[in-house]
Structure formats: structure tokens, C-alpha cells
Image 1 (cartoon, helix red, strand yellow):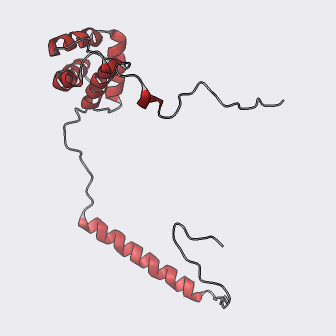
Image 2 (spheres, rainbow, N blue to C red):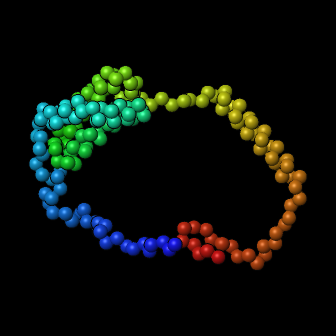
Image 3 (cartoon, rainbow, N blue to C red):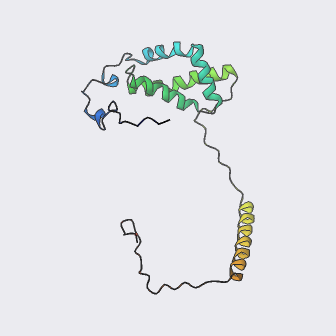
Amino acid sequence: MAEPINEASFDAPIPGESMVAELGARPWQQPPKYSTTEEALGFYLPRFQNEEFVEGLLDMLELGIPVTNIANTLQTGAVMEGLHSIDVGIIIIPVLVEMLSYIAEDAGIKFNTGTEPVKTDKISQSKIEVIMKRLKDKDTSSEDSIEDMPSEEVESEETPQQESGLMSRRM
């Protein structure tokens, strides 16, 4: 059976099209729907009482996604939809973080707030020394095996020197 021929899609946006949109044509270029922090928080409260939203939120928190990232994503999405300004969004982020943390605590989920310093596992100096010694022993044993192998000399009298670099010609 013959496969269909891939045709170019002419419905795709033209590169740079977003740069030439009329001023005010985008939702975030219009006056916001909620202009105060109280109004914006009034928008979020019913969402936090929605069962489907809370289930998805708890799934994300169980996966280890930090609360601060979720709050930032929520407010950024609302800014892009023209619901509130970026200024109001930045002001309400701490309140959103607290609300999300409360929901996670109420559900008994251990969550990452995103404000704790990242813990990195440090390798002790003694472990580093043991590993370096093993690598050094491995290198000396491989050098001995290389010296035991017969070597073949390759004549390169007429081989021209090839310049190296990004724009050099390939031979």
C-alpha cells in the first residue's frame, strides 16, 4: 500500500507573524479584567475549590514539582489571558504559594515549596582518593597491554597537512 505524499501545510503561521500583530490585538495588551489583587485572588479561590483542579494539583505535587513553579505558572497563564496584569500577578504569588501549600498539607502530601536550598550529595575526599587510585591503576595496566602489542608504522610522506577549524576545507 502506498503511503500518502507529505504536502506542505499552508495553514502554519508565517515566521515573524507574532511581531506584526496589531497593537492591542493580544489579550495581554488589553486592560486587565481584574485590576486589583483582591479581584485577582477572587478569580483563583473558586479554582482551588474545584475537585478536578485539586486532583491535578495534588498529582503534580506528588511528582515533586515545586509549589512556587505551579503558582508562577498559574499567574503567568492568567496574565497571558488578560485576566490581570503582571504586577498584580507578582504581588499575589506568595498568597498562591500559601494556598497551594495548604491544599497539599490538608491532603497529607509531602511537597517541595521551591524555596529550600537544593541539597547536593557531596563526595568525601577519601572516596575521591580511592577512585583516583583505581583509575591510575587501571591506566597503568592498560599502558602495559598497549606496549606489548606490535605497532605498525604508517608512512605519511606525501600526506598534506590538513588545517583544522570551523571553515577549513575537508579532504
